[in-house]
Image (cartoon, rainbow, N blue to C red; front, side):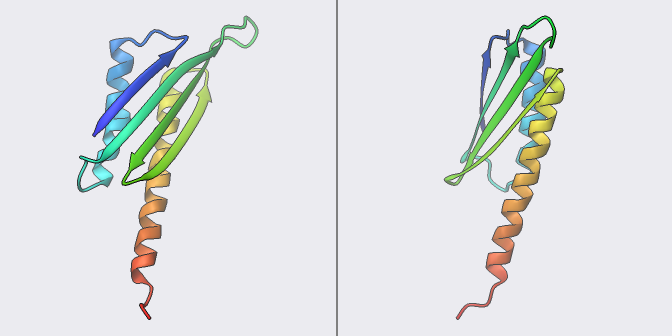
Length: 109
């Protein structure tokens, strides 16, 4: 699995990079083969406005076997936004797998 991480209006530090690798990289347990999986993760600070404070944005695009799964989240904490993206991607992966199972269970005519 290949994880590409991009940061916009935010310094990408090693602890944040490790956090992303741990959280997003943990999604590999849902797949048998991780060779054809590509994930693009983008984190950004959306605003520096004094009233709203720092608002962070996280987005992940998971490309597996030609299918694109996408999730995004905004939060006041960058780690929480990343965790929300991971949870959303995990739900989409389960939904995709259930759809595949249902198609395989249909009787063939």
